[in-house]
Image (cartoon, rainbow, N blue to C red; front, top):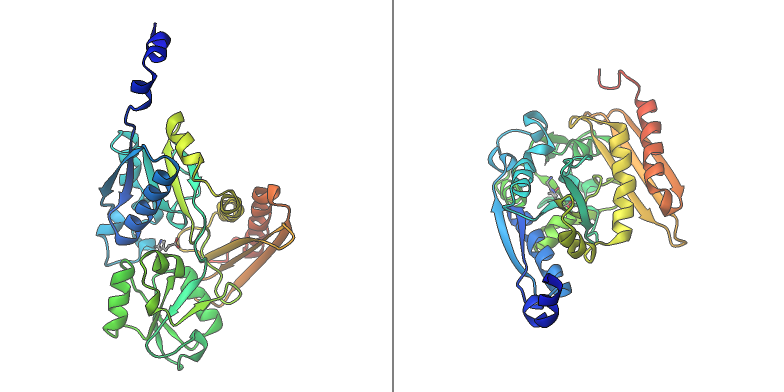
Amino acid sequence: MRYRLVKENPKKYGSMTEILKIGTRASPLALAQAYETRDRLLAAFPDLTIEIVELTTTGDKILDRPLAEVGGKGLFTKELDEALADGRADISVHSMKDLETSIPSDQALGAVLEREDVRDAFISPKAARLEDLPAGSVVGTSSLRRQAQIKLKRPDLEVVTFRGNVQTRLRKLAEGQADATLLAMAGLNRLDKTDVVSSALEPEFMLPAVAQGAIAITYRKGDQKVAHWLGALNHEPTRIRVTAERAMLATLDGSCRTPIAGLAEFTPDGQMRLRALVANPEGTLCYQAERLGPPDEAEAMGIDAGRELKALMGDDFFG
Ligand SMILES: NCc1[nH]cc(CCC(=O)O)c1CC(=O)O
């Protein structure tokens, strides 16, 4: 009976409005990423009706302490996870570098969007490049990965904690709370804020965070319709790269007090090159690993590099 009804009235069935609710943090960068997701969905499925559901997370509320002290990455995802679970949202849009390596068991990764610029930006009214900052200059950052790599290159600089979203950090810099700061190029590009950038730091100089510049979209496991929509948005080369990086991170199993960096890239001949780094926050110890291999072994390469770094670190690395 049901099939016959559809056959007799196919127009009615086909024009049924489908609604997709995008769950996102309410920060300007998260919203920009949610709008990008909406625009890509509408380009692929023009009949879709899309709603954006803004949520405030614990991480957005606590702005006075380094996140590593408060409890790390889950702080930015808990409220989004709950909205997905109870149906207030159908998908969650995240900066992939803020996502824990294991996603909640009731969720699946539906798409990884094409990666933005992976580099960190050096921002300073005092110097064009990090190398040019006078000795004793103060760099504001709350990222242990950036702090460690700054100290490695420039032990003569002072690093102070700088928290808050991109706009807050830029304001603190303008107020003179530091002589320079580092921010992801990806976020500045998405906020159309590249005018503040003094120079971009090449990965050889400052290895980016795992999955920096990539957007991850998760959905309720088993939601076939949503899986189909998200499948059209996935950028497979980006997904493969972050698979290698995140496998490295998961294997290394660092706490949020461990400065870790990782970047996988395709070489011109279609191979994949993974670079990974672990350091201590003081920037007095640093180990690096590199792997070159076929992209279909991305995960194995990441695990392998992670194991090597873990062995190099030893048990008392942070003791
Ligand atoms: N930890 C905050 C965060 N999460 C994602 C980005 C930027 C966008 C990205 O790297 O994908 C930022 C800001 C920054 O590090 O400057």
